[in-house]
Amino acid sequence: MNIDQDKNNKYFEEGLMIIISSPSGAGKTTLCQKIVSEDKNILLSISYTTRKRRKLEVEGKHYKFISANRFEKMKRQKSLLEYAKVFGNYYGTPSTGILKVIKKREDVLFDIDWQGAKQIRNKFHQHVVDIFIMPPSINELRKRLIKRGQDDISVVEKRMKVAVKEMYHFNEYKYILFNDNIEKTLIKIREIINLERTIRKNLRKARGLLI
Image: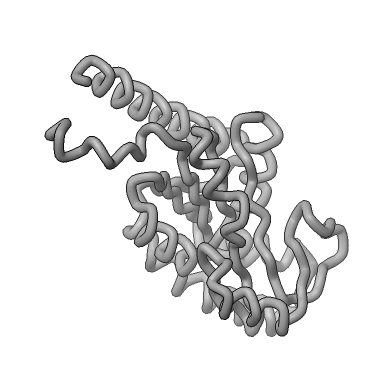
């Protein structure tokens, strides 16, 4: 790295953008909730969505539920870092506040799909630490979706088809984990985050020696 060429590129002086993606039912939302509950230095980005709130979902904790008209307005105003349409509903990440957090060298966790991950990666690739969560098997994923009891069998099969398509994007991610045990997967995610933090800490230290 040429220190003169890199003097305006200080991504390692800023926070991480940690992206966790998975097909529906592979456990990414549970993992994200546990990560932020254990690490106070990570802010969970709450996505906006136009879909209806499900039972047990809490406004502002799981999602921010808004109208399709408001979402379209946010798109026009370019106030979303990323957005995607999934099962006929929009999901998106507001840019307000996120970039300020990153500038303060604090980390942000994104619970988003491969479409949103691609958009953020294209804009902030040096900040991104992206992890794709795979289920232990296709059959296990189907069992989990049925066990959730949120959809009838026809909808589960539709979700399964979409899930398989989503899994083909695993090779776009730096890290790939198989979630056959939630606690073991959490340990691996913590190890990845600590590694990436250490890399940036060492980059700052090395750069400091050369300025």
